[in-house]
Image 1 (cartoon, rainbow, N blue to C red):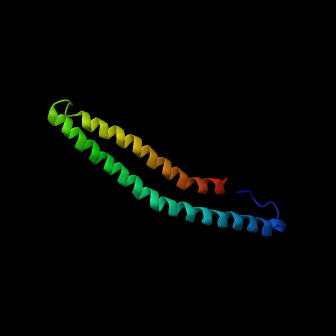
Image 2 (cartoon, rainbow, N blue to C red):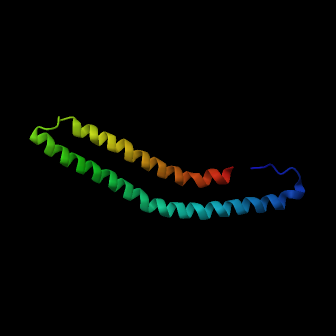
Length: 102
């Protein structure tokens, strides 16, 4: 934020800050609504992927065509990959704050 250099600019600076705050509020509400939908969807996708990988991996382990630790490795890779998408989603949540602060 720029420092008001003279008292005559107080009204202008207050108006600029009010506009930036209003913009932040609008964008934050919009992003919060989107995150309220996407966060549970991504978590469900992550958990469903883990269940699917464990189920399919257990079948392969049962048949003897896959080592016991391999399904766990696949689950770990999936968690790393989908966890990165969750982190990316949180980045979009924090981005409007950073833009208004600049």
